[in-house]
Image (tube, rainbow, N blue to C red; front, top):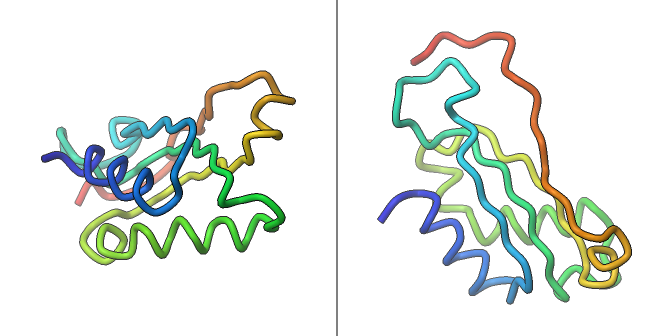
Length: 104
């Protein structure tokens, strides 16, 4: 099972995500080919209702603690409630290209 699939499974289980988009952005960074170290995630979950951004991110970090301690280097998050997602009409998270790194 790839890291992407493990992340998706953990986020679905922990947050009951209604919409989940997890992408490997490692190819945009100075890492070896095939790496899964830079992840971009859009998570729409009722678990975020009433929570500020930092609290939402803490929930995600808690769900992904094993991945974060075993080589996941960067995690770009967009965390929305179902109402926020509906109001925005959906969308895709874009990350800028990396301007550095050693490729290790």
